[in-house]
Image 1 (cartoon, rainbow, N blue to C red):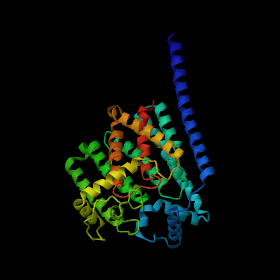
Image 2 (image 1 turned 180 degrees about the horizontal axis):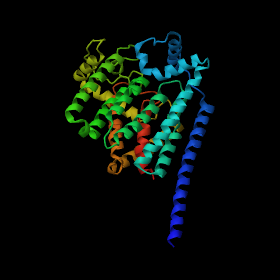
Image 3 (image 1 turned 120 degrees about the vertical axis):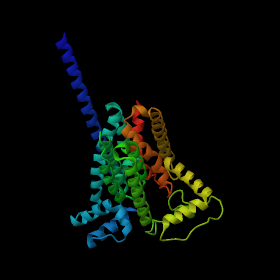
Image 4 (image 1 turned 135 degrees about the vertical axis):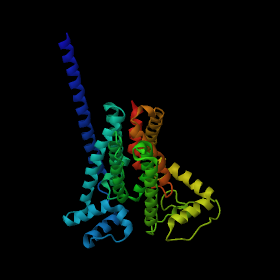
Length: 379
């Protein structure tokens, strides 16, 4: 009898392993089908903003330098384009780098959901991300977004692995941040959540005094980088979205809140921004609320009715499930909670200091995080 029960348990275990392997295989198939369909229907996007990186990639190939310091914050896609020139192949092949990194990050996303729930929920949560076309379509553009989103997922997984130890390795967590920052300026928005995470997870190991010094140093570096970034001119202008009242980038609006009090210090954009906020609080808060609404609202007036209907249904499901999962946060791995909650709160707030994108691509960085949370209440 005991032997029979042992065999039944062993067969049950083997069957569960098989199902687990089959689920992963189905995810791989779904990923390949999704990417193939996007390529067939949309092709590779090398227009609009991509032209900037194509030119810069060629310039880097010819000179070994960036044409302007600001392009350091878009380095990965530029270097991929330059590599295509070195290999004498079409720059369109740079999307292969997007796809490889995205596939790897998707596998890590599955692992993140798995440690916070179970294999069944990890399957469905990952499948939702794989089949969400508005997110996956960026893999086929020569923009910076695909690489940045993939690195965001990898950073969360890396932070989880390093901080979920008896002795959290906070140095290795901080060492990943520069890679995020050079992938896209929005990488700077990951700094405040990371600092908060260290205070939650690693304060006892590091010590409050030492961590305070580290925090001050990181904040100073962040402010210097922000000042450096927004001194680049053109689209890298900290005040333009507020002065011209951009909710959607490059689309001025009129709030009718009166004349603004501004400081003219072009070489110190952070000082200009601080002066604007302190002297125009109502104007600043009004724009921030409008930008946050736009950030979380994926629908757009220039989309078709069916497209907006699809996005609305997706938002209702993901946002509702994420909220329900937050209510039972104590049941989720505390390290994942400490890493993701500050990101969900602070990243959108940081993004609201600029403007929102026509196609919500700035929002896409937190969609995988919401998938981690929503998976805990999907089924």
